[in-house]
Length: 391
Image 1 (cartoon, rainbow, N blue to C red):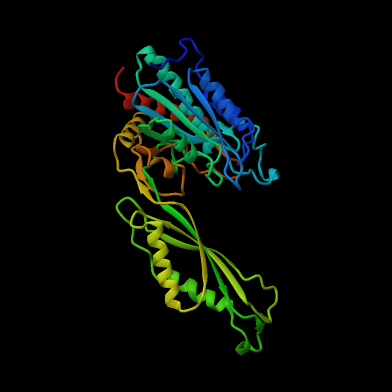
Image 2: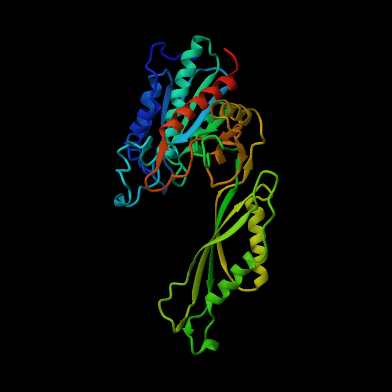
């Protein structure tokens, strides 16, 4: 049976989040952020596993898996303590890693994405476990990585492999990404689009612009290839997804002279795709259109993740009910936005994403309203009550 210390002090989620923010854990560095989480959770009776994974050519990444209880179901909260760089310090109106309180908000890099949500869930879990006492027979776990904002090679995916190898099951998962769009509770993510990047290279023959018959303009070839990819939309969207889209992200000629025909041209494009596609199907679609142009090219692919959808069910319903109870809002069930570690978790168990308002994530002067942190803690607490049922 899970047990929380009967007389342990209640976690202040704002103070806890601030302590994490003061660790400048810019990917791939941890700077002690995970130890702050582990120390707090161990004080609540969680068993903590500190896991570092490293793959050739990548940075070693610190991760944490913590669990309170041995029974089923095992409800997991997944998140990350790594943050994106703050950028130029002079652009901020405060020290990005000082975790100051200003105008009713906790300010600093990671306040929204997503140290605030980690703190809110830990506080909610403490209160839930204290209220349930020794009679609670399920489990609550946290999977916290330091590699969500990076290449995501040695983070959540590797922890899930570790769990599978030891025969440990997760029955459901909440990812604490800042999914709320304009107000806390207006959106839950039940899926994500897939993401893949193509890197296109075209060779030509360099020459003088006054003698084009002696050259072969690689830029012209590249333009024709890109036009073939942009000529028609990929699809019109599906029930839960917006239309897939292809965006050219860079065109590189590397030619400083105006009187030289370029001999090589490069471009990159990204495709965000819905559940009508797989990455393999899109590779075939792109190849068909490029081949029809009739000009040689080279193309390399990087696939960040496939599209996925977790149909509305128990997790999203419990979350939606909890949100309505606390905020009065009925959340939209959405698949918009970028990728997250839910792309790994959905193959392991049902998952939904819900967290703070994301308007300042990755921006200068990132901040989370104190009222939102308190409300998020309450929502997570109501969710735990609903998910595990009456005591």
